[in-house]
Amino acid sequence: MVNRMEKIDELVKREVSKQLLLAFPDSIISVTDVEVSKDLSYAKIWISSLNDIDQTVKACQALAPEITRTLASRIKAKRVPKLSFIADKSGSYYDKIVDIIDNLHKDDK
Image 1 (cartoon, helix red, strand yellow):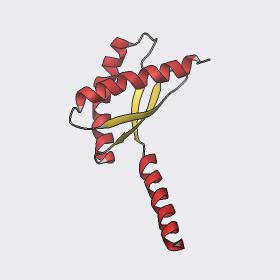
Image 2 (tube, one colour):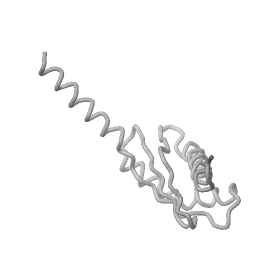
Image 3 (cartoon, one colour):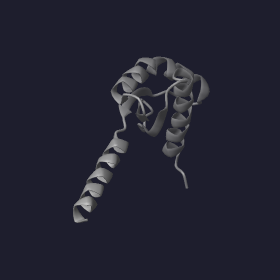
């Protein structure tokens, strides 16, 4: 059974994803995870991008107040969390591990 916080996390993830798609139509930005605090005061939003991830995080953070206002109009909650964008670098970490494994197999041959 999905609990209340998981529903809120998913709702914020969906709405923020929509707003990022509208704000950056020429970029591929993915919201990979969202964690909203229990008191709804803040939300950590992990994003990944094919572009420079640090620049993307800065651009998203600059849009955070606007996204928060839009979020407030779309969700029914006592308060709307303050958004904090974080770079999700798990994809590049995965790529490094695959490269290491591939190199190990090349050495065996």
